[in-house]
Image (tube, rainbow, N blue to C red):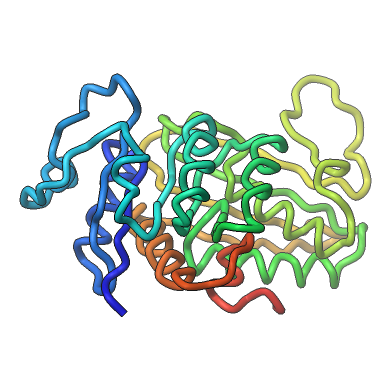
Length: 271
């Protein structure tokens, strides 16, 4: 099979530049396009140069329809509005759409899932092997421990991150809720402040820390009578997310239409 031709959405951002580097460093894929928001000062710039590589002749453009004509997939770590705008074009062009965007609403996710009867979408709050293994373990532990064990999720990210809790924290919360056979929406507890009263039994708590240049730290604690268990993951460089996204795209190339996750990519769905 020939190299997979990939578009990087948000190619001028931190994650976009990491994705361009990951494609350049890996076998089986080539950069076919670099998408950036309309009006960006980076439009027309060379994607390779922006990523700290030699010029590659792929300049940043805001025209996804044109650049997707000869592409096989798109790696999309942008913002919700941009991702939703990309969904219809990616589906119409038959592109594999790898979505790592966080902060998506319920209606945004409904739009994404609406195209998966005809398009291949791989969506995850985190593309790393370690985090997806962590989610699988969290689900098993939550299933094993009853509600005398409180669940608290703490995440730390760099000062520029705009959404909270992080997509990874929510993914871990979903794993914990799934293990307990409940819905996260009905059991999520966030933003404690002031006189909050006693902790609600069965709730899944979240705390978000922001500062510095942290790529992403996450921990899930199970706090029971006289003992506690904490499971954690530390991301040291966002390149791990880029390589995970690239792995997802290559895995999805040629798959039947559907909505997949990194658990599918890594074979963790049955853990």
